[in-house]
Length: 303
Image 1 (cartoon, one colour):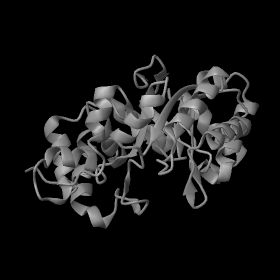
Image 2 (cartoon, rainbow, N blue to C red):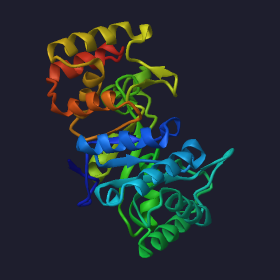
Image 3 (cartoon, rainbow, N blue to C red):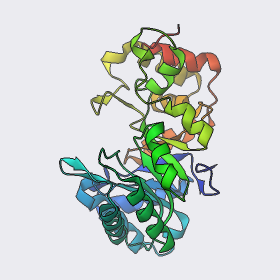
C-alpha cells in the first residue's frame, strides 16, 4: 500500500484500469473485481468515455450486487474528453461528475481527474467546479491526467485543493520522462523535453504519477511483450523472468515499481491470472544493474 500524493489516502501500488471492462459480462466483471480485492488491490480507475460510460455502468452493477464492497474500494474517474474537443469548463466538469456518480451507483468519488488539458481552460472555473464537488461531498480528492508541470501550476494558482495525481503514459519503451532527464544538453532524440520535466516536478510536489499503458509502445500500437520489434528487450525480460522464476509481464512491471518516484501502475488487463502476475511483481527487487540493462535493451542510450 502507498499514500496517494500528499494525502493520507491509502491505495494499492497496483491499480486496475477499467477501460476494457465493457468486454465482460456482469458475472465476469464481478468475479474479476472480487478476485482483485482478494489480491489486496483496492484502486480502480475509470473515465466517463470508457465504453461510452458502459464500463462505469457495469462496475456499478458489480457494486449493487455486493453490498459493502464500495467501502473497501478507492474509486477514481476522469472527465474532460468530448467528441472532437476537450472541455474543462465548470459546467461540463460538474455535469460529468454527476453522470459518473450515477453510472457507478455511488454518492462520491474518491478521486476525480481532468482527463486532458483543455486549450480553452479557465482555471477559475475548474477551481469553482472542484470547490462545489468537494463541498457537496461528491469528490474527496482531485488530480489531472496527461498534464505538464506549468499546466498544473496554472491550475494550482486557483485551486484550494492539492492535486494528488498526474496520470501519464509510461512503460519501458515509452519512457521519455526518464530519457530526457539523462540525455541532458545533448542533440539526441531522447533529449527532447516533451513534458517539462514532469517526473521531477511530481516528485518535488508529492504528486503520484500513475502509469497508463505500462506494456504498450507508441500510442496504442500494441504491447512490446513478445513483439519481434523488440527482440533484444524481450530477450532480457525472458532471461530475468527465468532468474526470478516469474513472467516477462512481472519483470516489466517490476521495472516500473523499482523507480524511486513510487509510481502507481495501472493495469488494463481483465485477466485475473495476468493481474496476479503484475501484482506479484511488487515482491521483486530488481538490482540497479538489471534496471539499466532493461532500459538499454529498449534501445535507449546512456550518454
